[in-house]
Image (cartoon, rainbow, N blue to C red):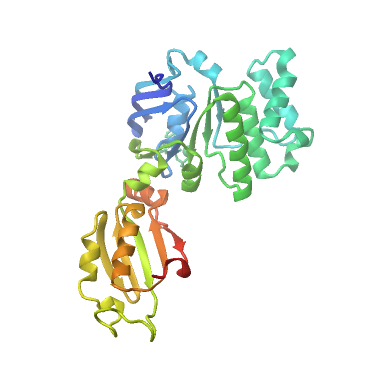
Length: 347
Ligand SMILES: Nc1ncnc2c1ncn2[C@@H]1O[C@H](COP(=O)(O)OP(=O)(O)OP(=O)(O)O)[C@@H](O)[C@H]1O
Ligand SMILES: [Mg+2]
């Protein structure tokens, strides 16, 4: 029998009203599985930091319940603090001392026993790839190294849940990758649950097991990144038709350009998983529910009609598109992906 899934965070109807008037969280229900990487996406002011502050026991909710590994964040707040690490959105290290000295201060704050401090500090530095620069002043670190040092501080107590508020904000792609590679290997070694807030859709897509989108204090979508993207049902496959040339002989309409072939659009539209099809100059655009299933059947129809193709391009919904739909804040950005170059698909 399969073992029960362990729950790291359980939130029911969590509400936070600031100053009796700002409804920052409005009845949030959410479950995060143990050892998962969970991403919370949302526009500015949607309640991400507020949720993280409630879960890390910095604020009390106005209503509702939240538990971390069964501990209530209000009633068992001291126990919760013993099992969590937190990296705030704002900078949380001192720049005029060394990385090691920063960790030493945090080790004392967290109550790491003096006999264990050195080992805990070097473990944390190693986990974030900072052991070689540990004795240098933080003011000489890059932005990415500072972020990794802040995360190392939160790892000192080997937390069961690590909360990261916008962990890679403002970092370049290689610094972001370094943060995530170190985090992933730490998580692999210790089975830590990671809960992070972000505006970077690609990061949520690449690194999270599950994603929730929050808008105006409510969770509006939850699932894996792939489930969220599939929920849009709007992949477009674009077939660039080759110029038939002089040697092209269609069995029934020798001189006709492909777009004029009678009934071809109807035959494509009648296929399973195809929602729509249209010609735009020499490109045939087909809207499909599931490209992987629909593509072979479409190619077969084109092949039977003797149509030559130059290339096939698939435009799949990205997490940006999902975000736009459910949080309604950004222009959609779609990524075209060339599936096959000409020679591979000429029939
Ligand atoms: N301490 C506070 N007192 C009063 N209102 C607050 C406080 N903190 C946040 N708010 C308000 O609560 C709402 C949610 O803010 P929050 O900081 O949680 O959003 P966020 O999703 O983290 O935004 P961002 O992406 O900009 O970091 C906003 O309307 C904000 O102005
Ligand atoms: Mg925030």
